[in-house]
Image 1 (cartoon, helix red, strand yellow):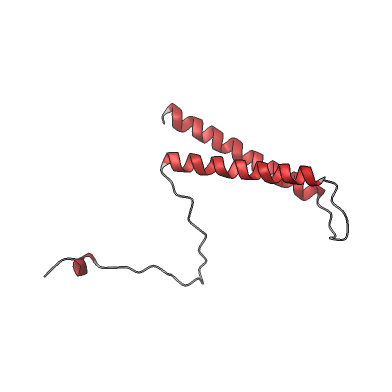
Image 2 (tube, helix red, strand yellow):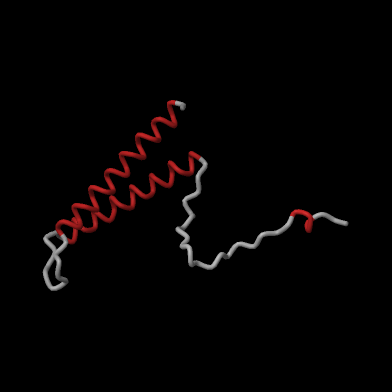
Length: 94
């Protein structure tokens, strides 16, 4: 494993830990009833959103530099498959 890939692995783990910790803090302070007011100020909420955005942007940069695409979405077993398989033989001229 190269030094650069080790760095990305460590950085990715740090970003995952930061995202999990931040989301846990938000869950812990979110009132159980929508009738209650959040203890966070509007400025703090905006700062948290900005942090999540920066974490996601850096994760995308790391994936792009590693050659991965993050456009994949989860597929469920009962989900209709939208791919169209084309035989290579059908592409050759006869």
